[in-house]
Every structure is written in structure tokens, then in C-alpha cells.
Image 1 (cartoon, rainbow, N blue to C red):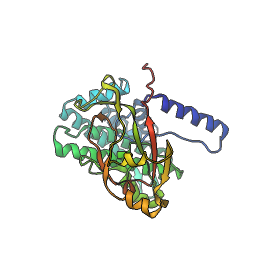
Image 2 (tube, rainbow, N blue to C red; image 1 turned 120 degrees about the vertical axis):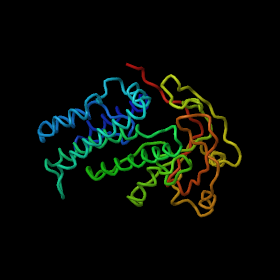
Image 3 (tube, rainbow, N blue to C red; image 1 turned 60 degrees about the horizontal axis):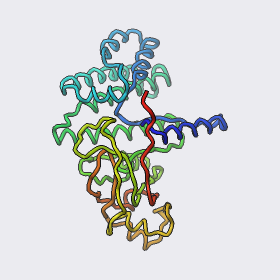
Image 4 (cartoon, one colour; image 1 turned 45 degrees about the vertical axis):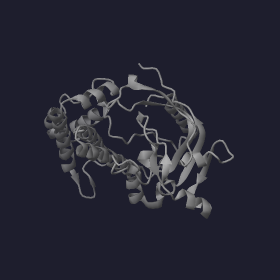
Length: 313
């Protein structure tokens, strides 16, 4: 996301890496929304160097698929293409992935780490094409598409952990990192997948707030563009909600380790109550959230503010 907060994070990471060259931080995405032209180029370059006999087939299968527009415009154009076109694209990217997987051997890869990364690059290219190939006008297919997205986000995170062996911080919306979902449209969320795969090695920090401003798109806009995003304000939390009780703590902003909370607190936490979860669209009704079964730590902010957008271009 093109925000000042993300830019601040990158600046901080760069400063840290300068001061700690033997222990660098790395920044990676795990979503299935966009595969930039560099991923197509890396796959093709690997094939050219290592499997030249596959180059004609891979070049033809990727023909016309490499993004040439800015990310946002390309994503919107891909999503708005006819369903048959989107599914044909996914068939082609899937075929490239099959060709590269076929060159892998049990216990390793033909070309070592380079091949492993090339297969993953082809996997991500296919994930994005496959994500667009669901029929989001059909409720059952839409649910399957949403489940697919969170599943591949978890798969990509697990791949990263296997390859690096490094401690990793995953940043995402509560509804993607929680241990259990609250939205019936999301039958699978990556947080639950990661907990099942990693056990207690996966820990969740959830966020709550009392009031403030944030950016989202109107609830009636199905496929929002940048120009559809505007500032909304949510007033103080209402009685009976999760946030209403959390905001009665004497501190303005605070966090709590739910795992070590006193028994009386855990009893209160282990009840499903309304909670505001701000996503792509607003307004929306509060969601039913059991905080104790959804997160390991909660950070509560008395007031929030909108993100700082960076200028385009």
C-alpha cells in the first residue's frame, strides 16, 4: 500500500540493516492480488538459463500476460476482464507451473535454490491468475475465491519460513490473522491455517479501538478504486461491545497478553461480543468476535487516525 506509514517502516528497516549488516531485515508480500512484471521476467530468465528447451513453450504461455500498466490499473483491468478470459489466463499460468515442477526431483531441485525460487515465482504468478478466475458474481464461487486467497497467503508465509528459517512478523487485517473467523463470507482465514501448521509458534496480536477516523470505500462500491476511498469517522464504542469495556481501562493506549491475563479477565474475554472490524468497506455492522479465541495479545487504542497516502507517480 502506498502510505506514509509503510514508507516509514521501510526507512526504519533500511537504517536497521545499515547498523546490523549481519542480521538484515527483509520485506516480502504474501498476498495473491498482484504479480509484477519482474516475477514473469525471473521465471523466463530462469528457464532461458537452466531449461532452454522449455523457453518456447513458457514464452508462448506467458504471451500478453506480463503487466504493462501500473499495479492498481492492471489489477482492475484483470478483474474486469470476461470470466472466460480470466480462466484461460489461469490455465496458461498453471501450465508453466506444471512444466517447472516437472523439472524438480525428490529431495531437492535440479538447479538448487535458483530452481526452488523460480518454481515459487511461477506459483505466485499462477496464484494471482487463479484468484482472478473465480466467478465473484456467484456466491458459492465467491466464498471459494475468498477461501483460496487466505489459503495461499498462509502457504506463501509457510514457504518463506521454510526457506529462511527466520523469525517473521506477518502484518494484515485482524480478519486475516485471527485464529478464527467472524465473517461467514470467509470460510478460511490464514491465521487459523498458520496456527494449525505452526502450533503455538504462531502468535496473534489483534487490534481494537474506541473511536477515530480511517479510510475505506462506501459499502455499496463492489470493486473500489483509489478514488472511491474516503475518510470515515466512527464515534465512541457502544455499551456491550468489546471496545467499550477495553476503553474503560485507565490507560489511554495499552496492550494485554491474553495468555497470562487473570482468570476473571479470561472469563470475560471468552465470550463472543460485537466488535468493529474495519476492512475495505464502511459502514458495516459490528462483527461477533471472541477475543480470547481469536488472538494472543490485544492492543487497544483510544483513538485512531487515517493512513497518510503517498502522492501518485
